[in-house]
Image (cartoon, rainbow, N blue to C red; front, side, top):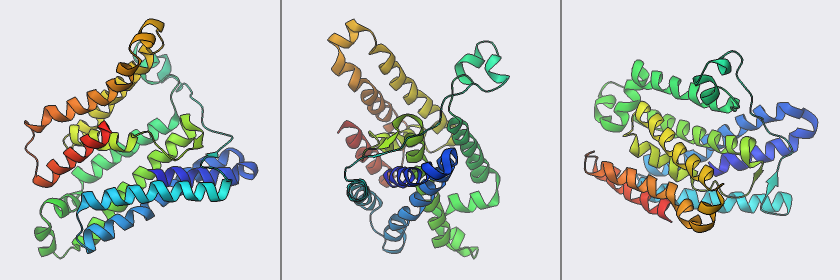
Length: 277
């Protein structure tokens, strides 16, 4: 996510003077490509070298944080890369005028939100409605069965890791062009939050969508409540910790109910520790 965040910022900053608003979608694509390419390090370590995925992911996250800040300071002279343009919220024609639903879901929304929802729907179709998706899922759960059918497990796994890196890069790029406006070397824990949503959603597309909506609601309520002077003055620490506490509570609630594998349990503990930190 940090790599896509940085690559998108550099691309837009270099092209906004000549390309104008067209620099934004180009920056998004560059962020997606950068995330996919950088994720190949994780794929090589985990698939070819059979390294522990948690250790490899932690090392690559540390590398990404250090590398992007170093490059930002080298290029811009500081750890920040500011862009002069971004996308604005707009009402969706016709749909925003629907009573009750329109103002809630289709008013003042970023178009990147709907792009992400379309990608979510397409990924669900790909994973659960196509033979390719069946093979891809089997490469994680039953690789020997896929190999016996003459399918390259390594290639399928590389594809899965690269796509996850591409989506993470897209997430960083979206942060940049919506509300951030500059690369500052951090995504404020949103990467760990996405893993928490994956676990809370029990690795199911519909569950993940519900988990992200739940976490968004927790963060949104926190920001809204901080606007009240009494609450903000007396419980600022509680307000700041509320989203994190809700994330940890949601993960802890499913540990006993959801019997995941040993590797997944370790991931849950790592993510919980990362969110707490």
